[in-house]
Every structure is written in structure tokens, then in C-alpha cells.
Image (tube, helix red, strand yellow):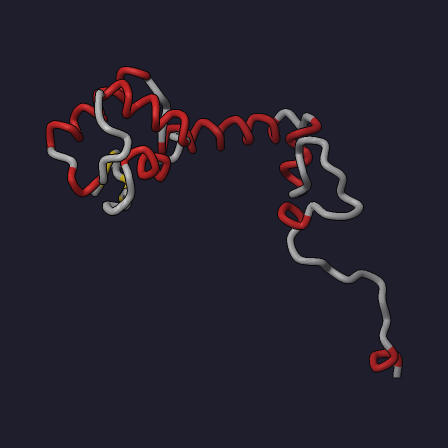
Length: 126
């Protein structure tokens, strides 16, 4: 089933299917389901058109920024940080952790796979 242009799994319970939408986590999903007056344990494939409209109305009522708009906002914020060359922007540019984590060990998620530097093996010496 599609909600806001996102395929959410049909066989999951409603409260656990809504977080497939970017910008909705589990707590927001539960708030939306409560506001719509639906059972959070109800499966997505059992939803009627009317119940789907209630969910969309609840999302509108809360005024959440979701999916493409949220992605665009976040990308714009990062571009702004990079443009003004602040510390966080420079960390984004270099692909290093932004929030003060150590980098002498760990940080592999941001830095990528290890790159060996300055080691000459015996096979290459000849």
C-alpha cells in the first residue's frame, strides 16, 4: 500500500508500518494512529479507504515535514554549513564524524574502508 508516495508493507501492524515513511518514527507513528482513532495492532492490508484518509488527515493536522521536503531541508542545512566553512561543515566535506566522536580508532562508517598508507612490501621492493 502506498502512503505519501512510499510503499509500506501490507502484512505489518499499522504502528510498525508507518515508520517506513521518512520522518516518521515509532513514537510519531503511535501519535498519528491515536489521533486517527485507529487500532495500532490493525494490519495495513485491512485498512479501508476511509481509514487511510484518517491517517493522512492526522499527518496533515500535526504538520510534520516528511519524505522529499525533509530530505531537501536536511541537505540544504548541510550545504549551508559547508558553504560558511564552519567546523561541522568542514567535517561534512572531509567525510569525518561531525559530532565529536573519536577518529583514531573506529569511525569506519564515515571514513569508509581502511586505506593502507606508506607500507612497502618485500614483493614490491625488487
